Image 1 (cartoon, rainbow, N blue to C red):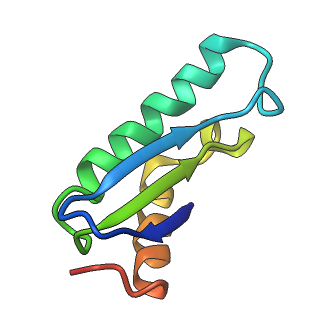
Image 2: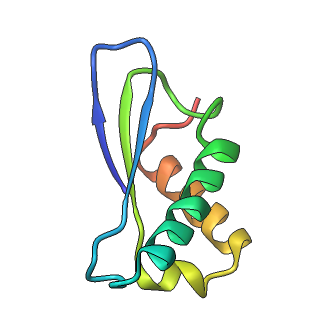
Length: 84
């Protein structure tokens, strides 16, 4: 996850999964869908305003249980002091 503060009044969220993760677009898109769901459920109302957030997909995203990703995201946001 990469975060940058901006002067805007809203958050922007982006997703990236490189071809290093998988040469197959189907696999990369599946990882993006998982990350999109994660962001939709956990970032929309729980973070400060004025942030650009990029979630980076890795190979392990497909094997990691969703609950573990949620707790990891919340831990990262808390550590970066970005939660409301």
